[in-house]
Amino acid sequence: MHFATLPLLFAATTLASPLHKQAYLVKRACTTGPDTATDFLAYPAYVNTASNATTPPGYANTYTNLHASSNADGYAGYTTLPTYNTTACAEKCTASKNCHAFNNFYERTAVSSSFNSSCTSTATIKCVFWNGAVTTANAVNTGSTQNNFEIVIAGSNGYVASAISPATGYSAPVYFSNSGIQAPLDCNGKDTYLGFQTFDANFDASRCAAACSAQAAYALTHLPSDGSTPKTCKFFNTYVESKNGVPQDQKCVLYSQTWSKGVATNTGYAYGKDVYAVGMSYGYSNATDAGVCVKA
Image 1 (tube, helix red, strand yellow):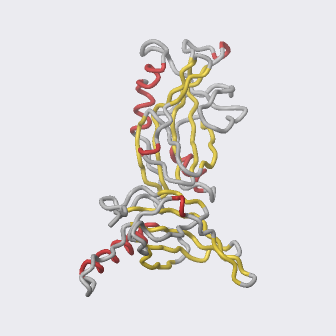
Image 2 (cartoon, rainbow, N blue to C red; image 1 turned 90 degrees about the vertical axis):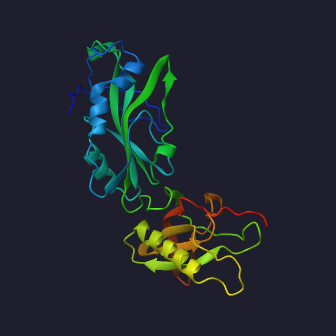
Image 3 (cartoon, rainbow, N blue to C red; image 1 turned 135 degrees about the vertical axis):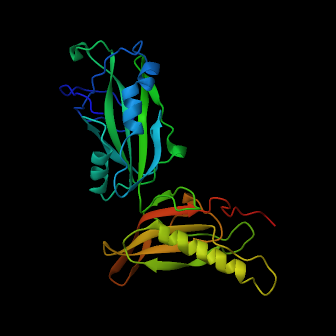
């Protein structure tokens, strides 16, 4: 469903960065009850539009029609739109090398008397862009109160580029920015590194998930001769390696334990006159067994 738009007006925002000087506002007839935050959240047009929104090609839908927006890793800016349009959001995200996910939603916005409406509030339609994945787990921004006006979020949908979307059997990715895992020994002084695989630079995390699962399956069918517990892949870090700024390949580094962003300290290296750098780095854990170390 499309909504009529009025001349651009200034609008409040709950995001960390300043809103553009001008923003589209969506006029809303206040016929469903008092013009309150609760009424805004229940407004049928917002619910229907979000629930029936198209999942753009190249993206996976991670949540639909929430009353919260994401607070994810790698904030990459936002824009406002005259209508709720996931396709337009996706096009803007795809056009940016720093965007791998986006969140489309309605934000309750205060209006001035010049808005000429029976409502004291309206909606700003936002597309917020992220480097890291948007998931139900990080959809925690439910709004705020500013000058006694309650800002809330309605019709919030999340989308992640298919290349980084959670692989079957693995958790949602954790974004490590431009650093790869440099894993120390585990809590028992053991090495958790299980090797790596290299693919072309067309990033696709599912290739690493398949490599991790294959290693685990092989280890379980080829038990150590000394009777020790086999080391199976429970976590992988994948990133694009660049040479002098040009993407070369995708690395899939496998581990028997999940590691956090705190040990993502590998930013690359120099070899002669060439500089190799890490970019678009993500970590994925096995969804049923993340490989948490237990002190022996």
